[in-house]
Length: 496
Image (tube, rainbow, N blue to C red; front, side, top):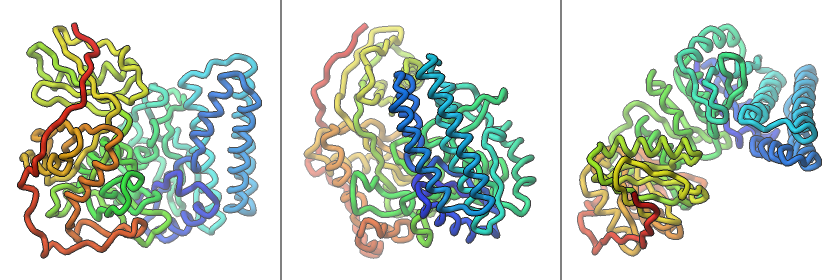
């Protein structure tokens, strides 16, 4: 059996869902289980609807629902027919009736919009898209059955960011999927789950990837496929830099490092369940199924390029914290990350270098309200309007060569190395937000001027040149090029 997860862009329209049906049909011999996200921007629209309702604006809330409703009925009419169409239209009518009841209760009767209610509202996106996909498969002659993910994905009760109860979920999946999937394609929504008491929860943004990984681990799948709108894991975000390569293969560790560093293709937690059972992950383009994509396994093939990819996180404020006590800096860094999450300011990045802790928060966060108490004198300095760029690859082996080449490439840009020498997979650095795009371009030029064609493929959407063979590779990067580390002016935030 395999798991095929289709993201929002892969189910955003009638044409997209019909392509999905064709892709699933070509994999029927492998007994696929299909996991889908909400259609396009449905989750955003549902949360917008919740905000209108909270403000008591029934008119705008109703208009928002009308948009979502019209789109879902239109798509259903394009992909389903006969009994399947009648069934899905009945289910959609019920869903939008329930949403309008919520609108009335919140806008007119003052019902509180709690995190639990937000989960209920957001869950409709995946419920409806998975029901439409099941109907589309049935209409295309593919026997299918819809499974409500809340029956098999169990979580704790942390609404909007619920954590899966892995082993309990695995037990249910092993019982339910083989029974329902006997001669049929099981279709379920990602992102949603339920507590053991049956209360709806969601796994946070990008949680459909995690659902697919949990399902794959639960049924011991041969492969977990993530179908999206890019050719695979790329050497850089194409929204930041055009002319990038697609990676043919990655290790679990490299994929996880890229996900937590800002790569959008995978949810940061996706790799964990697959790693435990060594299930390969495959990233594919639903618009171009003929492209091989990126295969993620326990150990990637040897590569002559030390850096595999560059990820970045923009619009950050980085706090540089220098505690004046002798406690373990790693412990202090973990405590700071936990504290910032507790105060509703989750850390985008946290690390420690030689006793100095770097904590990155979204620029919109009110970091001034963060009570930094480490039990002693502490100096806190500020890197405002910053971005964090992370180089990822198993060739980053703790030597100074990558740092030297990085500083040389960015010699005209203020840069602070955040982590090197401790991680064998990643090295991160701070640059001003205004210099992020230029920095990524220069780093990409430095580390991907020549590439290993066994590991990197041409990304046709970018129109990049074909890879140069490694036979022409020459050693580079051992000179500093006059590199120097420069800091932006630091402003004291607090001092105890």
